[in-house]
Image 1 (cartoon, rainbow, N blue to C red):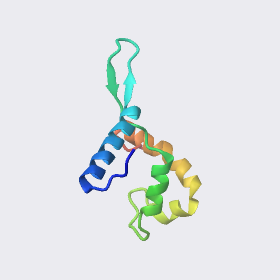
Image 2 (cartoon, helix red, strand yellow):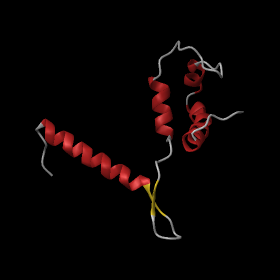
Image 3 (cartoon, rainbow, N blue to C red):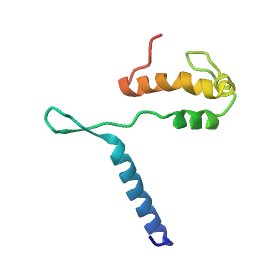
Length: 98
């Protein structure tokens, strides 16, 4: 490869890179008839961790009444707790009742 110097070339290459990256994760072959079903990738631990690092303190708690600072204090344990919950919400498009 060559170094990209022009703004439009850089934007074009990033677009190509991200399309290639996500194309690999979003296709699933249905073994019954060979058709392709588009799936979005699951929420990852790194996304949860990044969100906890970026979210501002002193935010008003939601309906669960859990302040964001608690999740930040829990660190990796919070990620382990939140990951399956967030993945369930992502897949079902519904907030869990319990």
